[in-house]
Image 1: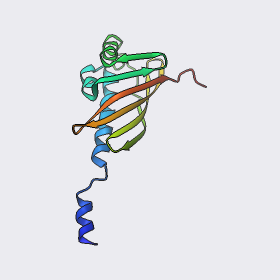
Image 2: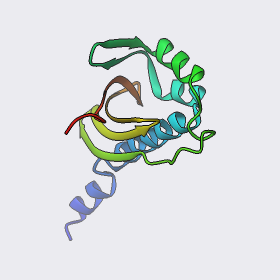
Image 3: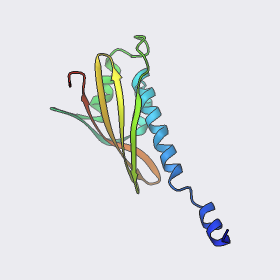
Length: 134
């Protein structure tokens, strides 16, 4: 093997670090939803994140207040059935698609993330309930 190539590739992780970080954020997102851990959710969202559903727009604060005031899924005995559906990373931006069955809803969320100042955070969440889609 060419020593130059070996040296160069040993210094690269081919995006693995970013991918792992994003997967950990998704895991924290699932945990935050299931246990209504708003402190955890607040840590993984940018302060100016906007949450959007058809006909609904919420600030991060408004959404976190709603999470605080609703029943806690884990305390209701609801199953932990969140699923990662896809991850696409392009440079310092990423789009993640997740399935979030929660209460009587069947949400699919698109989480937009940006890496700024060396840190990945969710900057946008779009979601819709697909329970009635056929």
